[in-house]
Image (cartoon, rainbow, N blue to C red; front, side, top):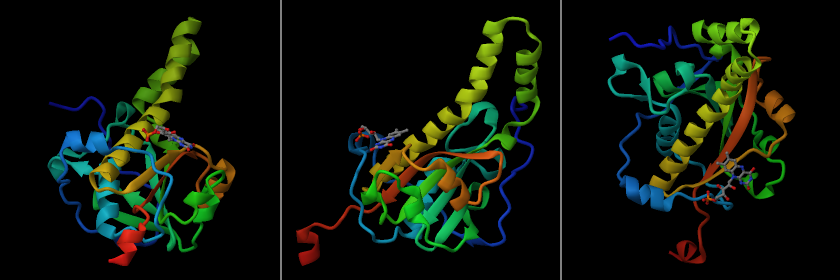
Length: 234
Ligand SMILES: Cc1cc2nc3c(=O)[nH]c(=O)nc-3n(C[C@H](O)[C@H](O)[C@H](O)COP(=O)(O)O)c2cc1C
């Protein structure tokens, strides 16, 4: 059966160099245990996150699932737009998650983690920040045209307002599904995690070298639990 909202081709911001991550493995924790463990944390070890743990988290946020031919993702998006890119900010630079190849595209090699922290100094040394970036250019297509035409030509304010609301809400809701998937992946692996909307949007835009059609919507900070005295003793 043909799919209603077909994604014609993968369009990712271009990067010069890709670093392959290991293949994602299965999570062992039960769904119930994972829901029981899900928390927001405000403490992070500065220990780097391993590539294997990172790929599990990124796969949960936006990974290819099912058979490779089915081209499905772990998280859904409005009209299958796939308009949210995930940038990975680490001590060794800024990277772009590429779900189709489970690799990281190189953006630049500077440690700009502190640019992402506004009111949370405790997050500055966390090893990884995921930045969810909406790309309006990825929402172009038949369904957006239909909605835009509805807004332009229907003479009913309520219908125009509804169509506009769909366009406005989609990127926020599509980001939310990814945020929750990452909370769950982190809970399943006992990794600390904090979603936050507090950041300097202008600074983040330049740190990630974003284009005019892109906008950072949310940041999720990730790190191992800080070691306690007992951990350090043994
Ligand atoms: C989309 C989103 C944005 C959030 N933004 C912030 C934030 O800016 N600062 C903050 O300290 N916590 C932020 N949080 C964390 C919430 O405050 C936290 O989820 C809430 O206190 C409930 O705690 P729990 O996640 O441990 O259940 C955010 C959570 C979500 C889902």
